[in-house]
Structure formats: structure tokens, C-alpha cells
Image (cartoon, rainbow, N blue to C red; front, top):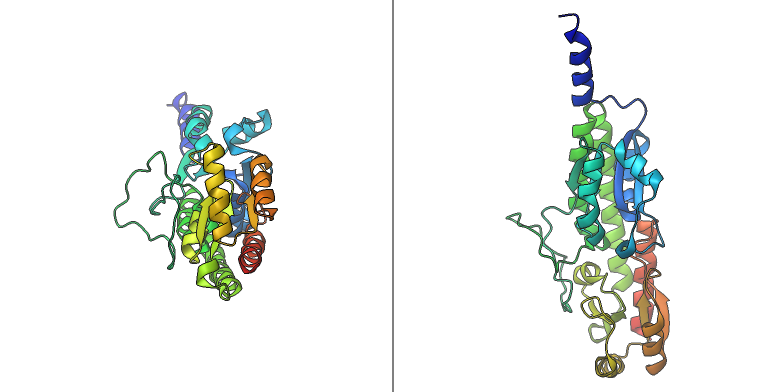
Length: 297
């Protein structure tokens, strides 16, 4: 029996790891870190796999990130392209890692289509289905949808660290109030934009959920991940002129060459709208102001 005690102790430690300091958590992008840190506060240590300014499509983890993954308790995923390839490798490196689909239950928009929707945002799915390959993962650009993400974060942090569940719940309640306030600010910022001027042109279609939530129309330059050909480009310029568009929005992670070509053709400018910015709330405020300004020109 004495010989078995060390084995039993090790088995218990493996099954119920004790976090000496902060709960180690990993996320794919900076906005997810913002959400986790708002709910986890000083009780969590969050590692971001794709830092701001980096392109998720060409992501390669650094050795320091893999070391962080090897000791992480949770990974919050959003169904991003790089996660499909790398999350299984993270789990292979750390069998105890619990992967949480933070976007679970959110009805997805198709990535390749243009959307002409208004209303209150994408609805919560009654029946949780799978995610098609062409689904748009950028759900974090709409504050009402982030409420669903917050619920998954709260549940997972509380499950991994039940001793601090009350603190996590209080933090989430504060965060939900912050989301409501941000949503109200964005609606107020866009309120004066006429219905016939609520279209914006963006290189990479990252703002579909934002557009749907706030009654805007996103028109993407990029077509199924590819730059448009000459005929498509000419048609796009013609449509932009008809819609009175004078600004082409781009992400800093992508080439601006085609966007600049279109901007010159319509006598407009190029502006940055980064869905991966770390200062998530302030960034959405600034993006809303930029969209409003571009639509009123």
C-alpha cells in the first residue's frame, strides 16, 4: 500500500491540477484576450497566439507560445482558419488542455456573400449545429453576440477554478453592462446616417456581423479570399460610385494595393478598420465613427 501512495498522489494531481498563481488560459486573437481578461481579471493569465498586427492566415507559433500552451488549462476558440490546423496540435502538446468553442450557438453568416441586413444582429441558434467551412468567424465585431461568448467564458473559468466562481460571475455582470453601453454608443453614432448611404466598402469581409447588427451593408473587395480580376474591379468601382462610396476600409494585416487602386478610381481614400485590434471596445467606437464619416461624405 505504501508503494501505491506516490502513484495515487500523482494521479490526483494530474486529474485536479492546482494553479499556484493565476489560471493559465490561451486564446487565438487579441479581442478574445480582452473578453477573457474582463471576466477573469487578475485571476487569469492569458496568452494570445496571434498578436495584433499579425496575419492569422500565415500564423506560426513561437516556442514561447507552445510552452505556454503546454501548461494552459483552457483554450478559447472561435473557429478561425488557423485554429482548424493548430488546435489539434495544441491538444497533442497538452492532453489536459480543454478547448472551448466560444462561438458555440451563434448563427453564422456565410463568408462569401454580401449582406443587406438590418435588425438587432444574428440570432442565437435554437439547435446548435456544425460550422460550415464558409462560415464567417468574425462574430466578435458585434457587441450583442459577444454576450454569448461571455457566457461560455464564465462557465469555463468557473468550471476550471470553482473557488473563484463568484468573482467571475460579478466580473461578467460588469462586462455585460459594458457591452450594453457600447452597443448603445454605436447605435447613437450611426443613427444619423441616411438609409440610402449605409453601404461601406471593405477589402476583407470582416465586418458582416457589425453590419448586420447596425443596419449597414458590407461590400467586400476580396472575393472568396482572392483579389478581383479586371472586370470585377471595374464593376466594383462602378457600383461604389453609384453608392456614393468614397472610402475603402482595409485591415493592416492585408495588402492595401487593390484598395488603393479602387480609392483612386472613385476619388476616395483608404482607411484602416482592424477587427483584430486589442483595444476591442475603443476600436469598435472608432470604427463606427469612421463608417459614419465615410457614409456622410
